Amino acid sequence: MFTTYLPQNEIDLHEYINSHDALFHFCKPEDALSIIKTNQFILTPMKDLDDPFESAMNFEFINTLSSSNDQKKAEKIAFNIYSSKLDKMKTGSFCSNIPAHVFVDEKKLKNSNLDLKAWQRSRMWSQYAKDKEYKGHAGACLVFSRETLIKECKKSSAELILCSGISYRSKLKKPIFNCTQAFEKGEKEYLKDFLKEESNIDHLFFQKFIDYRDANEFRIGLWKKDNAEINTSASIKGIILGDKIAEELAGKFKEVKNEKNIEVINISFQNGSPKLTTL
Image 1 (cartoon, rainbow, N blue to C red):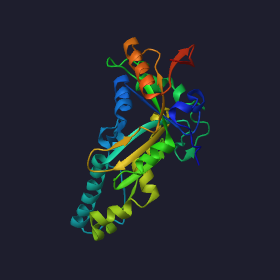
Image 2 (cartoon, rainbow, N blue to C red):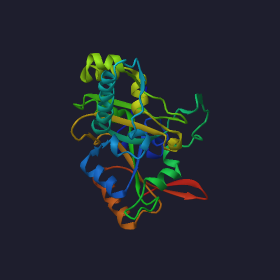
Image 3 (cartoon, rainbow, N blue to C red):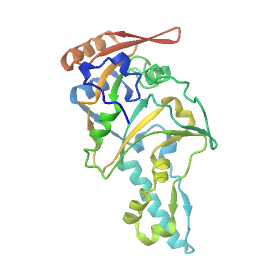
Image 4 (cartoon, one colour):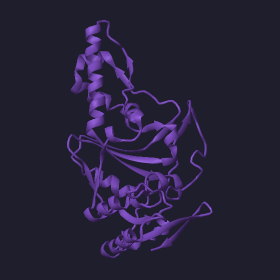
């Protein structure tokens, strides 16, 4: 159960960004301004994500068929399901304050994320909060309410709505694909059964290789043929600006602060320690 927080103009952003409800989206300043002005967060097809493992078909086949032709038909269904995943599943990625589950082999690590809050992660500022010249720490970080974003997702007409934290593994788990059932039921009916299995959902959409664990990702997914977006008018709680953001762009965020009544703060890293100041 998450705490219900006050509207943007009534919260203390310095306090809120340390809560479990807070989610963080690091991005280019132009993208942040677009999200704020349009109140729309456009989701990305899984085929366009940066982790190559998420684009590779990686099923564990069980109950294989004795007929090679029938087995090929079942594997064709598996291929179509994976293709649908890459095309239809539209995702939004956020950094969370809630520690992720990290596994080396099958052993879960303790204190795997160094107890850092999301906004304190210098790597995220370097890798994602860039400007047009790809200079790190020159972008912005939008602060969202997890609870409100999930409520907005549930209003979607998507066939499947998923919201969960990512688990990070040294050895990725394989979704279980039952070849005999797929062949007997056909693609449409088998897909319904396949997506009812929680482990299949987790292993298909919510795991990444351990190298990515610093992102501490919380993911939103909408299974939808067309483009997908989330209304963010109620969920944006504040903005954090990188310490190398251009002065002209900082001025545009100051305008947004006044127009939208959203708190804007700056971050700087002094001797490796993050420090926040109000814009």
